[in-house]
Image (cartoon, rainbow, N blue to C red; front, side, top):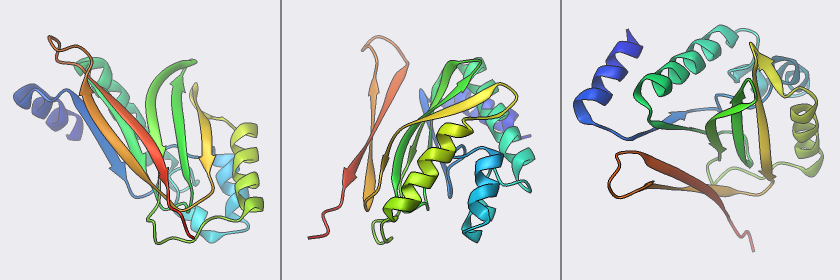
Length: 173
């Protein structure tokens, strides 16, 4: 099982943080928001929150949550393919569990302002997606962008690390 392999790998190697990369964001919209967006753009049918993939989404979220609880390591989520950048926090029972950064290939065209408004509005309207889990996007970056990821020790004498992420804007001029 994947959870056993991950736990054994953490114990054997002593890793202190885990970056989880997925082709699209693990948590980006609720099922309702994803369904509404898919009516206008079929790309949303490939998102984790789309009705056909919700079970897989929740299995992966639960696996990562359980792993974080057992191993006490920091886990950050990295996803892309949306033509904009975002930074989000994922909550369980209103307690922050994961930080997530969304970025795309800098070759992608930027999202249109009305599309970004719709994405933001639906995320605010439907921010809880299942079983006491919810998300909050702190900002949406409507330009071509890339992510910078920095991993650092919290204290020199401790094993725990902090994973910092931020976006950089691509100047098209």
